Image 1: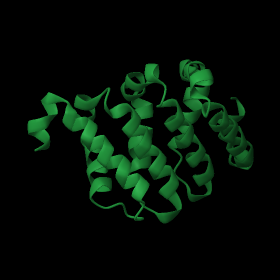
Image 2 (image 1 turned 180 degrees about the vertical axis):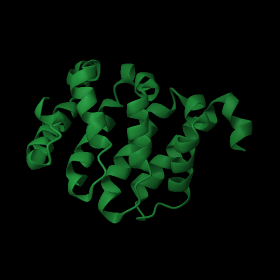
Image 3 (image 1 turned 30 degrees about the vertical axis):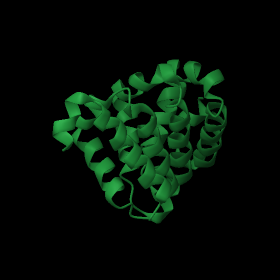
Length: 171
């Protein structure tokens, strides 16, 4: 976890590998997910910070972080907590708004993560202007013609429309 938090540019590869390890561990979300999520100052912080990386040389680290957060979003006990965590919400929304071809996988993972948590936080997600914008943009036309990303955005809208408080607003 300490290596995943490494911010020194000279140690970029070390950080990527550490985030890859967390991603692999998160693939067994039922086993590791609750503990990873509970590690607020360690694993969770590393994944959120990694997902917010923005440089082109940091794409691999960002992808692995967003993918791990996506895996954690499948754990039922984490869904509402992930949305309520400001950093995690910002990471998902930022990654869902990525537009370049090189970032299509991170975008797809972010939208799938939003899909996973959307049913549990439907009203709050629709009220979040930034989240609403990236979801609607992806549902209309994904910039990379990524069908999985677009389908995830449509599933998010489907979940958001299930909330009675959202129906009139969405219409």
